[in-house]
Image (cartoon, rainbow, N blue to C red; front, side, top):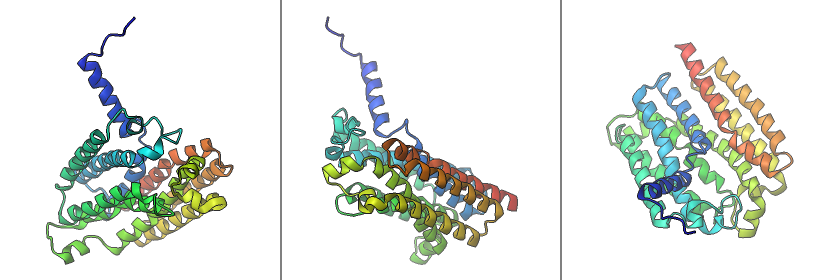
Length: 308
């Protein structure tokens, strides 16, 4: 018995489902990993509540840019992903969504994010172009860079200087005004956050280690080799130590340090998840990382609220 052709409405629903799958809509951990350090920086830059405008701009902008990044990443990796069991059925890799459709969707999402940025100020707009270039470069870095997770770390941390620029900047396009909108502490926070990205994305890379060896791409898990678990723990330690030192320098206090302690306890739990290098344990550690970022964000908000 022949099945009836799908109605236009059903076809539309199927297409929407594919696009949502392409941008990982049902896996919010990805954009949460970007969101929490960005919002922490926003609160620090504003010395407390940043206002609804900036909160909405950075929350929606983070979701949109992460979604756009997924489109670019899947196009760039489509020939690799078909050899990895976990990624073989992604829409672009499987052919359910064409390269052109994925790129058009990614461009549309990036444009929406840029329209949000246009409601801020000159330094934030200028930084958004640099952020876009890094985001586009990451999928191709794994072909040539021994630790492409470092490039991802810059991309995933660029919301930090942008948050400072949006809070402290003006509509002056002069170089001194642009430079003055982002203090050195903001760039230091970006570097600090980069170590966190190295930690959780190395956990992610440990999941696909065997497949990555076969297809010949570079990852931090392969570069670190048998030192992968030690490397992840070192990255976590560098992140928490530098984030704590910078937080204190920027005026945060006891509640913030309590948050650092709770985050450190989560790192111990992550060690227990990844120490045996099982796919399930490493993937769970990666997926649960957003709680670490959430802990530090809540600690930052509470600390500044109590100071106020």
